[in-house]
Amino acid sequence: MSAASARTQKTGNTVKIEGVACPFCPLLCDDLVIEQSGTKLAVSANACPRARTGFEKPVRSLSPRIKGKPVSLDAAIDAASSILRKSRQPLLSGLATDVNGMRAAIALAESTAGVLDHMHGDALNNNYRVLQSRGWMTTSLTEIRNRADLIVFVGTDASRFHRFYERIIWPPHAMFEPKPVKRELVYIGNGLKSRPAGAPKGLKSNQLKCKPEQLGEVTGAVNAVLLEQPLKNSIGAIKPDDIEALATRLQQAKYSVIIWAPGELPPDNGEQIIDSICALVDTLNIKTRSAGFILGGNDGATTAANVTAWLTGYPLRVSFARGYADYDPEAYNTANLLESGAVDSVLWLSALNADNKLPATGKLPAIVIADSDKAFDKEPDVFIPAGIPGVDHKGTLIRCDSVVSLPLQQLRDNGHPAAAEILKAIHAKL
Image (cartoon, rainbow, N blue to C red):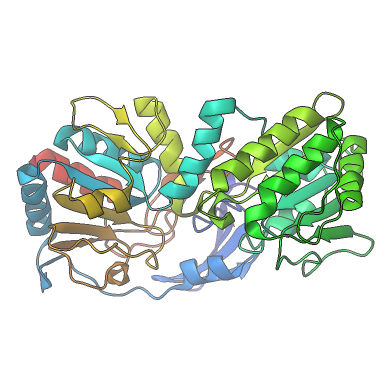
């Protein structure tokens, strides 16, 4: 059952909807069952904590505001377009939206000489710098689910992605075999849960403990062993024998997958860790089969990066100040732009998670388009409430593996327009 083939059943005033895709996590689980009564939603099957919070959040009566005073939607759009019209170089950040919302954001940035950066731009940047400099071999959720027999988690235990184990690591069914593949799990890092809740009996798991900043050193050491280079020193609590044992298991595996979560890597050397993982995958593929996997893309980050690449040829952190798409991952960093005063207005877009708040903008004019007024501590110049993709309006999101685009349904009508509609209306006023 996928979101495209969802079924509905009505009983009294309640509508039961099966095959709903969840927009609140980059896994985009598409098997949820939602019960809808008016604007009230309840997840009755296949829920995780993030899905329950997102779908079951009570609807609040919100109106657009200008400097804290309720106004009509047209008045708020006029005010937002006035700010952008006067702006020399606006920053469009946050960008937690769906495909259509991101398309509209890029069009608006292009027409206003603006800069685009996602709220998770640092994590995205670490990934894409490695992809640009050396390339990588990555796989899909489906391949992991059906083929991988050894999975190595580097710096993450996937606990932030609640249904990853249930749907991918120990699913009840397999695509190519009568039973799911028997697999072994290895965790590299400190404070990781190497025995996840719900693990089936007989699941093999092991943990190699090291500090976060040593993760790249560990994967590099495994690679060195595979390349027949001598290894004499321990890394943290990991002894050379442990490194050699992991190298042997990786070499003997039919299909190994090495997983990292870019948002959980240390900020100072995340790029180096990812580069080391990709080098290890390259070496393994000389004699066996191996792939990397990126467990990330929260708040529409994967969608934003892909849509930006389609339309500009670059990943995020793009400026249109020169009249064309200019890519610079350091100069067009949201924090750097705000600190240096390089931008003179901010549009913050957060239609997927109100917990992601507008950063401190000082005296800059600020426009917030979000699903809740919890998206800011200080009242912005303009606030326009937006519907949530996959809840309040239809849409499309791209899964964390960048392989599948899933359609999202409208489950209720809370009267708030989609972010794409708001952005297009602002654009039209320009």
